[in-house]
Image (tube, rainbow, N blue to C red; front, side):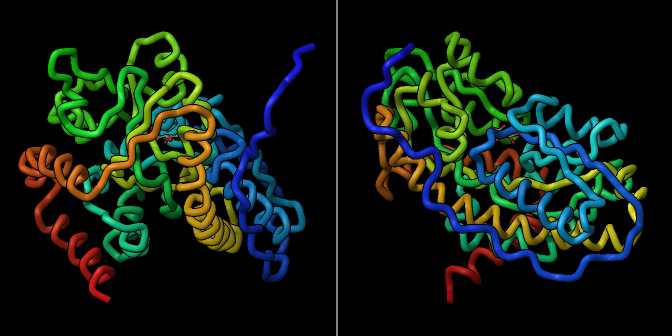
Length: 344
Ligand code: TK8
């Protein structure tokens, strides 16, 4: 037997309990078992809020709707699971917006670096009419997009060296970092612009790619870095906050169409409630996860405003390249929502 020494480490921060489930049991419209595949681990806000989504449906249908959640990309990655929704071989999934831009190109606005400076601004954007129209734009694709929630501010981690400037990413006398990106061209452009060697890859393959040295690093919110145990293979973290990516909770249109309208309404309501809870959990996780990673031996570099500005300036070409393609009007609309939150 292995003798474990040291202090037991908490698996999660002090998390808010899910809000009490309110509302009557709806009429009997038959029984449904829903399979949901997600990318992240059982300790993640994504999983915990999905569990809450399942609880709401189960309670309000007196157990007629059950949702079974399959975590850790065990059913596939974001791209594959969206395709499974289209063919009807999977009922639900919870991808990042970035790989979903193949369905709704406007979602790429979320991939623009340093667009959403605060969580408050990000939430206002996700709750806006323009964001709702992006969800509606999935209609007819085989995917019913139910709600946005938070993946979060993305931070760089790597196994090669501390990073506090774009020059550290590019490497002056050494080679640029090999950074895994999501399967999304704007992210590719960000890391190319910074002088890295970006490699798009499915999230489920990332841990072993880092373990085997296929890539030096990756970028994800602190909570994902922690709950996916990336600190076991990544010595350095930098608080870059370069992109805020949402998640989208989605259902196969085939599954959606099999549900009675009253069940559909309930699913939509449960999705919104669980998204609100997810954002709360993600918020509670964020700084706590960074501190936990530090305690577990990751060397974390905090960047001051000037250092962040250096990154922001370095990625300006990404706006020049992608602004016209994503749509300057759309970007301006998002920036106006952001400005409203910072003014009051
Ligand atoms: C989880 C993914 C993931 C995302 C990524 O399925 O791929 O880096 O941030 O967390 O959506």
